[in-house]
Image (tube, rainbow, N blue to C red):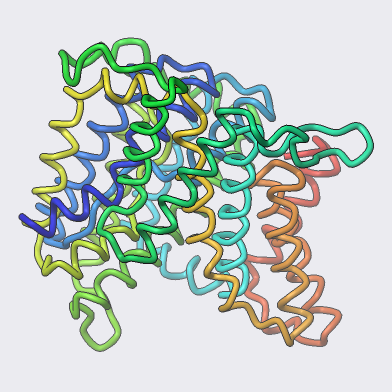
Length: 418
C-alpha cells in the first residue's frame, strides 16, 4: 500500500496536465476531462492489478494527450469527438493485436532506433509545448520562434521557479518530485498573486456528461483514419511494452527474459484505452513512474489497487485542480521535466551508423519543428527503409516497414501534412 501511494504521488501531475491539454487547449469541458482522467486512471490501474497482478499504474499518456490536442484537434482541425473515436478504435485494434499475438510480430519488426527516436521526439515536443505555453518562447517574424524579450513577466518567473524547484527535488531524489514541484509552484504563485486561491479544497466531482460517450467513431473513420489511429497505436504499443519490461525487470518478475501474464497486462491496457475514450480522455497507457512504487517494495497487484483507489478518490479535489491548471506557469515545468525524462532514449540510438542515426534524428527533429508527432513518425518510417536500401542492407528491414513507408508516402502525396 505504501508503494501504491508512492506511485500515485509520482504520476499525480497528470491530473492537472491532462485536463489542461484536453480542456483548456483542445476545447473540451475541463471538469469532465478531469473526471475522465482520474476515473480512467483508476479503472486501468485496477484492471492491471486484478488481471495481471503487476505493480504497474496506468493513466492518460502525456505524449498521446499532446498528440491528441496539438496534432489531431488543433493541427488537423478534427473535432475532439472524432479524435476520441480514433482513440477508441486504437484501443480496439490494440486489443485484437494482443489477443491474436500479432503484437509480438509488430514489435519485432520495428527497429530499436526508431522506437527510441519516437520516445525522444515526443519528449522534445512536450518540452517545446511547455515553453510555448509559458510564453518563454514566442513567435518571431524573422526567426519563426524566439526567446521572449521580457523574461521578467510574473508567469515566466513562476515557470522558472517551478522548473528549478522540480529539478532540485529530482536531484535530491524526492518521491513524487514532479507532483510536489507543481504544488510548490502553485503555493508560491498564490503567495505572489499569480495564482488564484482556490475557493475550497474539495467538493462534489463535476459532471462527466459533457464528454461521456461523446466519441465519434464514424467521424474518425472518415478523417485521416490511418495516420491518426496508427500514431495512437504505435506510441501506445511501444510505450506499454517498454514500461512493462522496465518495471517488471526492476521488480525481478521477468522469467528467462520473458514476461509472465503479458497478455493479461496488455489486455488491461487496451481495455483502459477504450474505457478512457468512452469517459472522454486520450489514450490510457502504462506509466514508467511505476518504478517508484517498485523501488518502495511493490511487487504485486496490491500496489496497483492502492494507486487506483487514490486516483478514484482524487475526483473530490477538483476545486484545487481547477485553480492550479488554469495557470500555464504551474503545468509548464511539469511538461518540460517530463520531456527531459523521455529524451533519455537518445543514448540508445546507434549514432555511428548513418543508416540508423539519420532516420532517428529526422524523427526526433520533425516532431517539434513540424509541431506534429505523427509527422515525425511518418518521416522516420519513410527514411529508415530508404537508408537501409542505400546501405545495401535491404534484407535487414522487415516487410512491414516497407508497407508502412509506402502508405505514409502516399499519404503525404495525396493529403500533404499528417
